[in-house]
Image 1 (cartoon, rainbow, N blue to C red):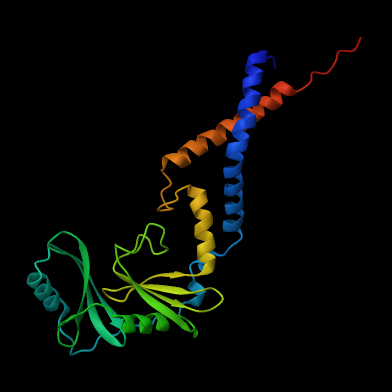
Image 2 (image 1 turned 120 degrees about the vertical axis):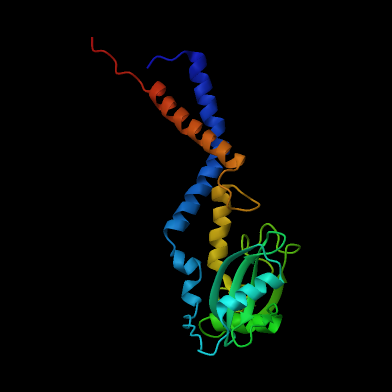
Length: 249
């Protein structure tokens, strides 16, 4: 393959210096890929630490859900009903009403099936009980923190879930944390050290150091193009560097 000396030089230099920069990212992608492929995603999510859910059964003398929902929506001037669900919160049944409030934001309310009254938000002591019940086995409580827009942070492991929420942490080998909604007590996420290792490597995989889940960011696009150029220049360098066999006399 005949290539001019100047072109040969540019191919060699581009491959050399791009390899220094891009090589670090390629190494991180490879390490992350190895970890992802050798781990169990169910264990990363903490599914093996979750207790089994109990079936919720409504009694015959319960408040009519249609009537209770209509009364709630009219009293709170809600714009739209999203859904109604029967759930258990600390041994009591409630209608979980998801709706859009007067400002158009998605909200959740709990209506007692016994008398149709609206239940207040989950307090700290209740959050600890719900988290302890969701955890299979027993662990020593570390503490509970209420997460809101002001203190959740862009790097927090509870990102992209409903707020406000409670973060209830327990001691143990995996530093287990249960995240649950302060509106209805619904479990939003289980987080362990294994998940945190996974998330750390995922951050370098997407090259999104803020939200960690944006795979359309310009830094990732740029690094992907540079990686492609590095690989192509390597193949070109191989082709132009081959020695031709000498002709026999």
